[in-house]
Length: 308
Image (cartoon, rainbow, N blue to C red):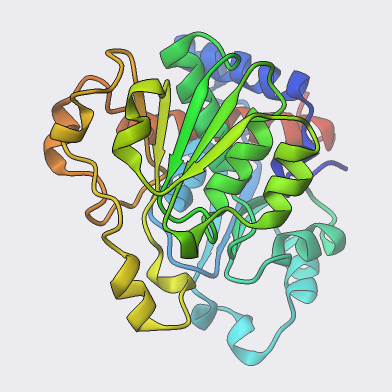
């Protein structure tokens, strides 16, 4: 039985297949309206979420299925000390597929090891967020018409940003891509990501603290917020939170076909004035996330023998 815990669990062929299915869902929604009739998604969100949780739930409903939700550890038996493993075994008795978000790295892996149904990692601490990356890939594909030969700037919190780690893992597998890593010194991409992904695969990359100096060369600009919930020290968070704020002025030197992405929520790292720029793609990203999660749910349920 297959689950999705890390974006590397899927081959590039499987990623391309999901994009093709998502495109078909967009073009022919009625074809999929009853695809998951009679099946249930367990939506286990032990950490706050708006887009990811609602996206999974909307995806399952639009496939004709149903959803059983847990939102917040305080509303579940986790508050009584139940282990992640026992929760996985219990939820497997009631539902057909699990989407789990958890503040601890590795919680989704433990869930998959103990569940008897497919498990989707909806974000585990600062580790990774594979379905956000699926949304990112579909957005890049729809905006650029390719996933290759791109200069991708990632900006902001690159240390704790699980969406950044997953995106680098995914896009490093497509030919000709180059990364520009833009962050304060304290929030640089972890050394293991550079060593095990970029350097090991010979992927070209540069590191800088200056967004404006590299703006003209970017095909993709992936903005991220500095995440208060990942900091141990409020003073450090306040010092770094406004390191990068994207404004219309800073976009004057950008390519006309630049695509601006952001996993959201934003705080103030993208000025609302940028929303009117045709290069702003972050709300398209939100919608694309639903379509890719629909495609993923179909794939995993089919492989589990739950649907044909």
